[in-house]
Length: 434
Image 1 (spheres, rainbow, N blue to C red):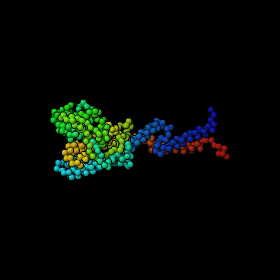
Image 2 (cartoon, rainbow, N blue to C red):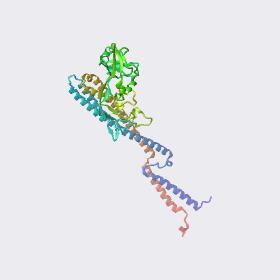
Image 3 (cartoon, helix red, strand yellow):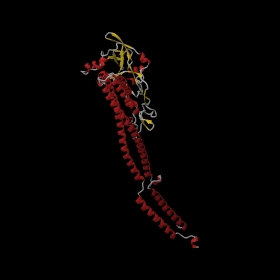
Image 4 (tube, rainbow, N blue to C red):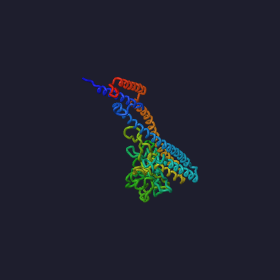
């Protein structure tokens, strides 16, 4: 085969250009990255993209957690203040139960109690930026508002633990914790179990049940003074009261007859004039996911709603969502009773209500603390993942600087030598001869 000078020249130039191309690609890595395109290393580039996607997810979760923890810290601070107000409220109710208080003393205590509830309302209207912490997803709406005037609210009997144990049948799914207070035409007080319409005398609910409960007995047929005819169960409460317990026209007109001691007694709902707190938020949760997978409502929610903090009461049975201010309105009921100088009520029912309200808020605070702990633990885990993934990205995409410097010097030397050799062995052109 004849080898011409043109072939030699073409082969030389091809090898020289290839050498320069390899040198140029190596020089691209001087920015610290060895992967600039998929063709540089198909397997390595695939890993690089996968690692980058994982890192993006981790960074998004970290951002969510930072926002969530901030939200929960502010919520917890508000709940701590509310819990302190509840403890103060309980202490003042205990003081109000002292029989040595005169009417003026009771009214002064009532004013202090009202101020405590107003402070609670202010704390529960806390914001972070322009978002309300306890409004659910309606976080641009101020959640709690206390009425400017007193309203006629149905009176209730909040049962103590011993009373709850006695008046609840072990075979009944519903738990009775409150009863509606009724006033008889005989000027006596009665309490109705709204689950079945059974009516009990005040003396039996306060004292008589104790004699039967001594041996572990539960409420039984015959303990009631009578039963409200046509009462349809707990759901009937909503026919006569709104979700905040304010009586309506049907409630004002309500009258039921029972026979006590052979005498007919007409019953009407007992009411008291008190302030009412209304809830304007909703019962929906704000989720900030902290890890890959489905949303875990138990731990991925960062907010507490009015229903979580203040629970439910007898007036919430048919309301979905619940009023969101049950315990607040029970506390305002206590304010009204103490303002009326009812020492005996304060020492018994008042203490029961304040205990229940404190326990409810404390439970909400504990739940919030547990969620915050879960997010903090997730944050620590994500920091470890971030470091691990970043290390993987570095391993697959970063340049070995020392090795690169050596190879660049090697290719630069080869390229220079190639130019030098080429100038000596390539055939000269006509211009060279001339």
